[in-house]
Length: 422
Figure 1 (cartoon, rainbow, N blue to C red):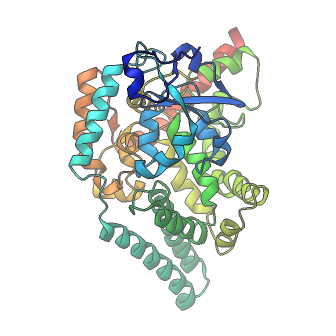
Figure 2 (cartoon, rainbow, N blue to C red):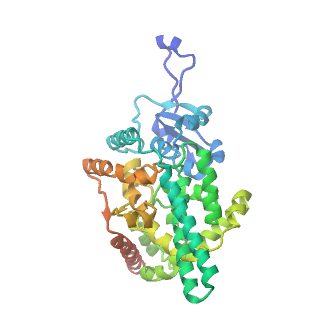
Figure 3 (cartoon, one colour):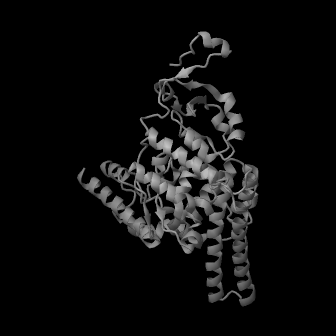
């Protein structure tokens, strides 16, 4: 229960006593209709306001009953601006005897990570090189121009068509990485400019919805690889992931597909169909249901995306699907991101091919950091991992891609064993 502030000599210094709360009380308010969270030891009631949250009510709701300090700082580059929205929601503070972290999270790791973030700020690693992003956009436009010139000049024979399809798929993949940068507010200092360019890139160049991407992707960052919270591990019964889910499916005798062969049918279902079917359906329905007519207008100008789906799936899954996928474990921000992500070795090609998502660990820890600076903070992240005995996984590109299949095969075997014997 809340406890009023002490009335003593200090009362004259404070006109109004500040209610204080225990973690036991705060953790009761983790329902859809009753949500509290903690930021910098201050307690906020976000129940009604979460509906207005620009990032969507789900992402902020995932931290109901928890300390959201590091997630709050990770997602909002302009803390002074967003802080204005918090003031009316303040209802009290953590009781003095309560720890800053909930659920027994490691306070030392949290303290060291916040020191690391301060070091990154002092090193100006959140400062954007605008020439870098201008060149990225220019090379996408150049690829698009080459593709259409090929068709115009050489006609629509098999060879020109194949060349055009390959070039367009490349430009689409690169546009996907670029919209990701603007979506994370990592290019311009003012969020409104990031939002504006994001709508152009994801809408005009990708045919997708900025609002759909924001609401989906930020949930992934907030609680990566957590069932019922990370939409990227919701496979609609097509795949079973990690170790917990396949065993649960097996025990319950759930067999929507032969999961022990999922590492084989992945090639037929995963890369070819994720974007053109599943994502496209979600995008269109989201824009219509939520009346995102501006996003829909941008998306009308889009044309082709099928080949790019292969590229997107392999790159985005090599960092996550091979890592721990489980139910909520209430880890600190640093540990939760390291548990759910891994890196791919740096090279010019790997950086370009993956849109710098080969530095997935650093990107998850600092989602607003411009991607051209991720390699600079990586050595410091490695040191912090070594200090606390946390594994920092980094692997060659080919191995990372093959690990996707190995992971699916392992989960499939777990399902089959549980289905037959438990």
